[in-house]
Amino acid sequence: MKATAEAEKSTAIIKKFVTLGLGNERYGIEVSKAKEIIARYEIVPLPKTPDFIEGMISLRGEIIPVVDLRKRFSLAAKERDAETRVIVIELHEFTVGIQVDKVHEVMKLSEDDIDPPPALVSGLKADYLEGVAEVNSLLIAILNLDEIFSTSEKLVLSGVEDGGAEKNRSEVSVSTPAPEVVKNAPPTALSAQISPDGMVEYCGKSYFVGKRQKGKNVVLEEVGGILKVLENGEVLKEFDV
Image (cartoon, rainbow, N blue to C red; front, side, top):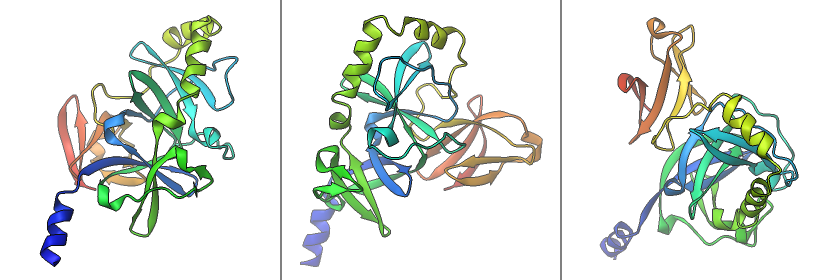
């Protein structure tokens, strides 16, 4: 019987999820839907839109609306800090950025690990969730992005198409610095600068690269549990994460 149970579990579909934080709660997004994670960015306000729409950013010339996920979920507003991130997601050829308090890690979950959502989880309706999983005593709520953005994306697009944001569009594309991202990078890649003491920070932890590397702009990329510190495509250091 034990061998049969193990065999059944081995055939279960394994998926990767980016886990993010909003306050004390953790949520998951399928890696396949996450395009990039942006660490530093400037947002230009978008007029005549709901409060949860923060504005727009320019990503390599593409105008992308940004939604504050806290406000979308009717949570108390929070000022941006060093851990705030925007996750760029793609849904049926529609691209939107979601602003979150923190990005934690990428984890693998079997479909057997994910249970159907109860009626409410952390104040969210079951419609907003694909399921829930318990990992190391932590409850991870898997977000149903199609349901969350079924209306907000239309509101943003209509505002841009009506011409009300043309001035802001120009400001985004011309005067606002480009967000720090990496083209075609996996969701766990982001740009960083090595500190004067030779350290870089990743997911709340510090890693020593070397004082000789101080001031360099690098890319942090996690692959298979290994964090790579890259400069112009060359690996400077690797760490277990």
